Amino acid sequence: MTARGRLTLGILANEFFDPGSGRMGGFGWAAANLARLFADDPELGVRPIVIAGEAVRGWTDRDGRMHGAEFIPRTWNAWSDRRRLRQASVGALVAIDFRPSYRRVLRALPDAPLIVWIRDPRTPDDNRLVRSVRVPGDDEVPGGLGEVRCDGLGVEVERRRRAGRPVHLTVTDPFLVPKIESAYGLRAEGVRTLPNPVEVGAGAIAKSQRPTVAFLGRLDPIKRPWVFTALASRFPGTTFLMLGRSHFSGPGSWRPADLPPNVVMLGHAGDAAKRQALSAAWVLVNTSVHEALAVSFLEALASETPLVAMVDAGGLVPRFGCSVGQSGGTGLDKIDVLSDALARLLADHALRRRLGAEGRAWVARHHGRAAFLAAFADLVQRPGAA
Image (cartoon, rainbow, N blue to C red; front, side, top):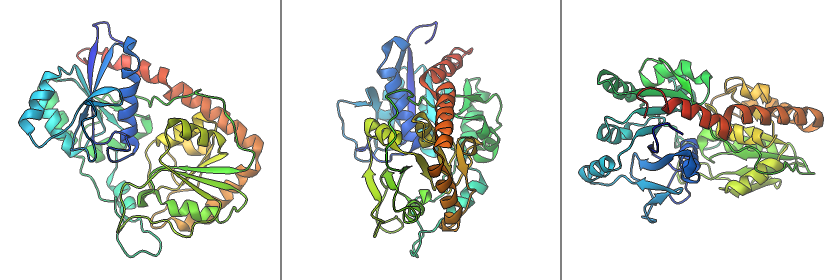
């Protein structure tokens, strides 16, 4: 990977896409896949170390590893954590986006070149739209909609820049760059693209004989899964697969009840089961109030499954499916236009095949393993990067 030998790469995150360790979102997917990619292939010359920015709920010391990589958890003892981080001899640090809890690690490793992998830069307008979400028939303010103040990243980046320490801002797609300044309070200078290492070509595509529609994501209010189940009631001859689980339960959560009989809840699915479901699906439907570049979109397209969504994702959704436009609140005001878009795709086999094939080729070219490794190698070989 580098001309200077083996690189020890710190991967800083607050979630790790591990069912026993808390949240299962896109940030965790990025941390897990980055760790596995390098841990599984030592010939790449990168030794990954996963670093927790906050205490990990449910994690126990499973021989001190996470996704095949060494794992440094966060403990109550800040001095001990700092010493362990220093002893790890981190040659470069990838922060999976930014959260305020990262500061302890960033300041413990002030000399490590920093790569910020920006994945979901939420502007004030994005946050207002997210806060508008309501669960139908529930007076509780939904959980999981609170704004996370990320403008502290600007402070951390400026500290490093003034000290002459390398900082590299990266995004998963260029359409996110204009959001950086208002989301993080820093100048978006020299931003580079670091793609998602999505697996493409893991198996043959096997579409189901029966019309099948998939939902892939957390079953939390921000994703508005009730819109998907309402849509299912309009297509009784179609199977609607729900892949994912809630981050939390109790007041403010979505509690599924009286679901249409054609809805199949699969819960959290491992990689093989997820690929099988997406390969079988004719369409992926996303009902979230907000997305950046959702990994679920890329995984679906890698399985030649076109998209119907209430977001645009930088033109990705209308290019390989249909975007019905954003909507706040419950999202049920879009149920008619969602139904029309889904009906058109389900009825047009040739269109689905073309969109799926084009989408798969686009993901392989821009977000497959080779695309990620080329971009990463270029990044770490820049002067002072590692």
